[in-house]
Image (cartoon, rainbow over all chains, first blue to last red; front, side, top):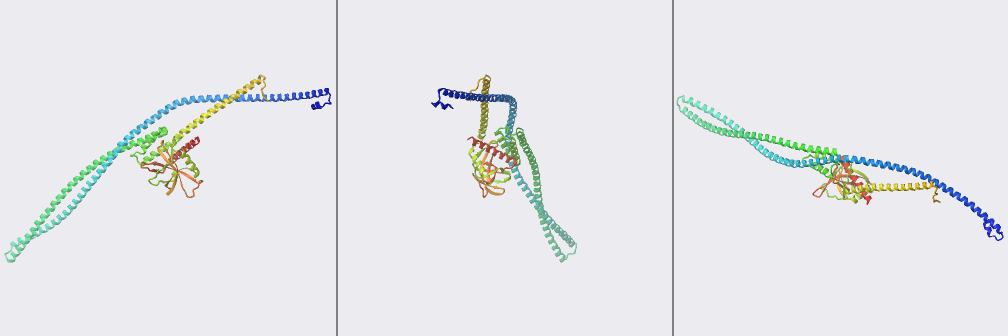
Length: 425
Length: 93
């Protein structure tokens, strides 16, 4: 009979009391059993918590130890960095200032030399051009005159030779006629003799006239020849003078060349110094403006050959590459017309590869930030700095949470030791 | 993208400008572009080319070929660094 039997009015009071008593005893036994289970569960949970607590405490102790070790290392690093910085910055600043001063000096000297050199070069060019022009004209005139005189002399010599032969012929004729006349004078006078004598005498007169004429002609040509020879002597003297002038100019030219050589050596020494500075301080060490302007001064110097300019430019590019530092430029999508179609070799110009859609995306990124220029780099630095700061703050938060867990575990352990049961279940 | 003509490997072609990047620090400016070909699609693989560019006082752009391997590396570095930073800035916005 169970407890519902209490409602049965046929059962006596004693029986009802007995039912109630049994029911109560059963309930009490169940309750007693239940309490033991709960107590076992609680005890088991408490033991578990104690083990966890001890484990967490050990973990926490290790974390504290690790934290202390890291903090000590950081402190040591800070001290090292501080010491290194004080040494390094001092050395770095000294070297940097030395480099900048040197560059200033070079640029100042270079600009002076450029100006002086330009003037000297222009003057020399002009002078040489004028002198060469004058000399050429003068030389040509003298040479033409000498050639003309030589032609005249030759012609006169021919004429004189011709007239001399003619004169000789007339003189021979004169001699023959005189001899004939002399022979006729010794003969008896006859009309034939008189006629022959008169004929020969007339012939002699004609020959003598011809001789006089020939002599005059010969004399005239001889005078002309003397005049021409005198002119020739004068021109030869002028030529000697000209040679002396040439020699003087040659000496001047040599001196000019020496000066040019000296200036060239100056430029070479600047290039060497520039190269040395680039190499020693890896270029990135110089201030931006100094570096760029020094390169431009040298690369655009008029006195430098194209090959030298090219050498400086390549040297500059090599130095920039060596620094390995980040180079951020300003983007632009402007494009002006070209005077002539550029000629390009693909082999030397390829810098990247990608599909047209990728390239279009890249182009949009560039467009988005165009004209922001170097500020981009500053933004990135700020971003990195903020990220670092956030990470540090997160670490501190996490440490705080760990400490809280540790404290609560410690409290639980302490309560356990004091026999206080936790308010669980 | 803006277009311009050029003679590449002896043939006249049309180039599409991607961007031009100037560096005050270097004192140099480069133009980056690719060459248009017949039948190009979005997926067509292209080479990005670079040349030195200089604006003249009389309002023209003078485009000249990169001369050495080292200069090509420099042009690539300028392109890469600027793009990397441009992309980071995009992410920040």
